[in-house]
Length: 96
Image 1 (cartoon, one colour):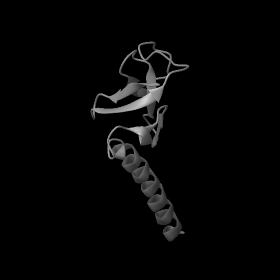
Image 2 (image 1 turned 120 degrees about the horizontal axis):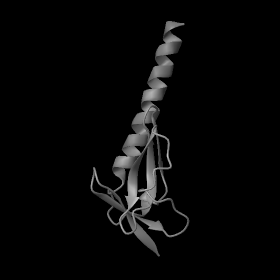
Image 3 (image 1 turned 90 degrees about the vertical axis):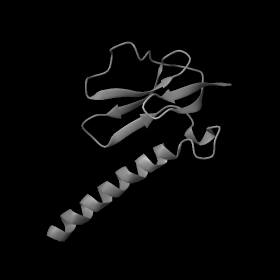
């Protein structure tokens, strides 16, 4: 049904349904993006990091990982980005 997706830096593998894709070996992205997650079978891009902003993307189903905590790093990362944003907004308000 799907193919394995891997984050070489973390060793995470998650399923992803087949479909449209972009080859991670093609240099079509601007330099401000970095390919983070790739399809373990064909090397297609499954997730990106925006280098100069607190933003990342995924194109697979982290909640469908084989283990109950395999994708917890993704959710922790997202939560940290939200917390940082909320804390910085509170700091700006307290200075006003």
